[in-house]
Every structure is written in structure tokens, then in C-alpha cells.
Image: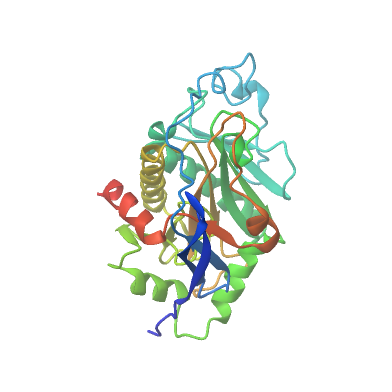
Length: 338
């Protein structure tokens, strides 16, 4: 199996010393190149942007007079799926419920609630069971949509306002259409065009296993931190043998749920409160050279005058500025997967 080249540029910057501006010091900076996409990330040293404490979320997460995802409203405030997709109306798996999305982000879209019985679930309460149930319900919906016709599918989540979430009740969303998203198409197309033998993702997993970025494996799910992250505290999960979301089994969903829950526990230990995750399917004609990828990143804590973690670097240059090396993040997550 061909080796994957991990390119790194080591730069030394000369800057004024913080405590003595008349003195100049040398500070190392690392620029890493993603071996598949060419995306570059900058890993800085000497500066930590992680919060020292968690904010009080009591006021923000208090149950409002009306929430469409709470147990007393979800049956009347949400719609039912067309019978051409599923005969379940609303898809339930364990505590999770998946219903039609009222926002037209794509031709077909669903919203999944981890647990209608709890208006807010803090990170430790996003257990492996709750997350796995949600992924299982979304997988069932995706299979129903692909019964209409094969298309691009993804499942994605915001959590609290810094991530872009407009509703506090924890939930996720799916998107299904003939176009897909920019990153999703790029990942699949570059995987198919990779000049190595077999699957790029199989080769990447084999190369990362046991290394400094390796976190562990559960069933078919391999977990590690990426060489060149696109966000803070990023973790990847690759499902070997699953080329699209429709290929996920109940065991895969349970294992992915355990992985995400372990990452959330790590975020909680780092005093973090907000995140995004995305799971990318392989498109309408899945290739054996692509494997389902789930990636999760933390977002800024919610404070009255919080610092956004998306700057001109991320939004206008598509280049992440990271303050914690992927190898250090892997060491923090590894104990959560046992």
C-alpha cells in the first residue's frame, strides 16, 4: 500500500516579547498540508485560546414557553414523512426522533432530536446511546430517500449559538440532493483520483494506526486526529467498508455514537461548550475508493463578548489557525475510548 506523504513547513517568526516589547524572540510556527485536499493549517505555539472556565448556561438553556422539539410539542409541531420515503411518519430509534425539516437547505432534509424528553443536554449527557440512536434514525431516513433515487447525503450538527444553532434543544440535520456540498464533492472526487492502489482512506488508516494521532478503533470505525485540521480540537472517524451513509449498520451507528460521545466528554474536560460535526456520504455512485467520514470540531464558548473562532484566515483563506497540535488532542481523547 502506497505511503501517504505528510508535508510540513516549519517557520520561525521573530516577534516582540509580550512582557518586554524592546526585546525580540523567535517563535516557531508549523504549516501542514492535507495530503488529499492540499488544504493547509497553521499550528501556532506559545498562545492558548482555550477557555479557563465554562460559562453558566442556565439562563440560555432554560426551557422556553414553546419548543417544537420537546416531548409535549413534537407530535403537533412537526410534520410526518411522505410514505414514499418511510411508512414510519416520524422515525424513532431509542430516545431519538427524526422529522421533516421546515428549512429548505436541500431537496430532502430532516431534523433529528437526540431526546425530546430533555430540552437541554449538556455534553456529558450526550451519551453513546443517545448519539448512536440519532445516527441510526438518520441512516434509516437516508435509506428511504435513496429509495427515491441515489443522491448526495450528509448528516450534520450545530450545538448552541456559537456553532450556528438557532434552537437550544440539541438536534442534528441531514441534507440530500443531486448537488452535495463543496467539501463533500471534493473529498469524494479526490478519493477517486488518488494515484495510490486501493482506497486512500484504507491507506490513511493503516498509516495512522498506532501513531501519535491515533485514538482507537471500535468495530469498523477508526478514530484519529487529522494531520492538518480545519477547526479547533478536530477528530475524525472513518468507517471502513462503508462507502455511503446507506452502508452504515446498527453496529456502525452505535460505534460512531460512542466515538462522538467520547469526544464530547473530552470537550467538557477542556471547559468547552459548543461544537459542529458532519458525516459525509459518498454520493449517488459511491466508490470503493471512498469511506464514510465523520469529523467533529469545537466552537467558541458562549459569552457576552465572545471571540469567534472563525477569522479571515478560516472564512476568506480557507485556512485554519490551530492552538493545539493534533497529536496533543489525540492524547486527550484516547482515554475516552478506553
